[in-house]
Length: 272
Ligand code: IP8
Image 1 (cartoon, rainbow, N blue to C red):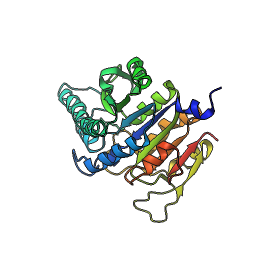
Image 2 (image 1 turned 90 degrees about the vertical axis):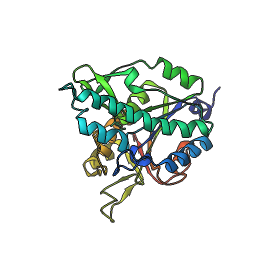
Image 3 (image 1 turned 30 degrees about the vertical axis):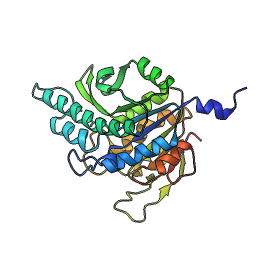
């Protein structure tokens, strides 16, 4: 009989890397290539089977999407270049991530959301996961990202990496989710402005619902809702029993430890 450990190995892990980690959100098109490289090293060292990576937009997608009102949908033709630009800058950021992953010998393959997802009022309506699942089965590492996508009702919109993470977690046989952000986890106040902010090390779903309103937003432009948006996406997944570890991916080794299941500073979110 297969042991629990072997069964777990056969299940997928999703790693979300926040845009605030791999870019400087206070700049524009400001990639942190040294952080991207360090994370690629950590992912390589973790040597995971069945891994899916999703990254955010940071100072690439968000300012461009905001400038043209992409999330709110198509209202005038002049926005079309904005849609193209938003998607394009995301492919540029994705290219930097892919470059680093592949040159660290990770068999990463980019899966472009705008080419395989259609949303309806901002929520994923169609997503053919056939290729994605095959890639995972073949031990490739699919890499997706928040993107400008077509929308049934709005014409187009912005799909967050967090919604993709939650959607995929419910579609794939996911063992756990690791969310890499630029703070040590979830706090009862904004740790960047309040030095008495207390880190939650573990929250059950009912505790999470209670403290949700205290969660800090994100610095810089974020058209998809920052930390609260992230948590709202993750709640249905945690409800299904998938544990979520939020770690500071801007600090060395935390992502690595969370991936391999070592004890790590951060916030663990669990059903109960
Ligand atoms: O940073 C948004 O992805 P997120 C991507 O995961 C764009 O919310 C295009 C703004």
